[in-house]
Image (cartoon, rainbow, N blue to C red; front, side):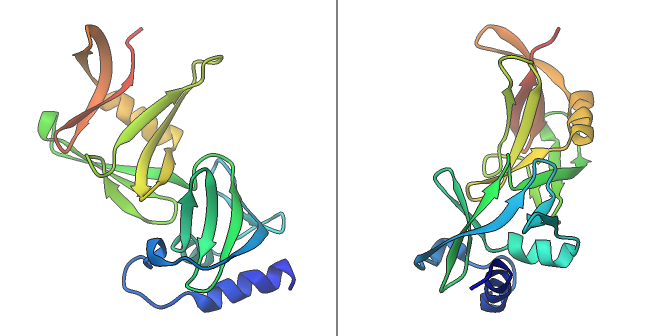
Length: 186
């Protein structure tokens, strides 16, 4: 079957659910990889061409699962591998509720998922050892993260407050009673 036929078959197999489908309960046979890729900027590609329909990207995103280091689109009867350049989602908007330690940070992804940073959806920042460039992430769904867009990260930097951690000063943000270090002061 062609890759375009596989994509259409996947769409037809997605059961109608309110909310996200229970992909963690589905364990179909692996059917191989398809030519689908999610770029670092959150653009989805199929057969090398960007998928322009947001509704289709949203639909595919609802059946995504990560097993180990590999990403899959999963239905009750089929599991196909896809490539993800960095993280499968991008956090494109931030809403700040409250202030100080009572502050809540609500992130919206490029596929319109919303999560609040906290124990169930922690923030983390990876720093490139060569360039020292930060790559911030938030957990959006089980085992699936969003890269925090640069503009949203600048908002976090504006919200950052100092705190001592293991006798070292860090800048970070509060959300849902948790402190998330985002960098060291200069």
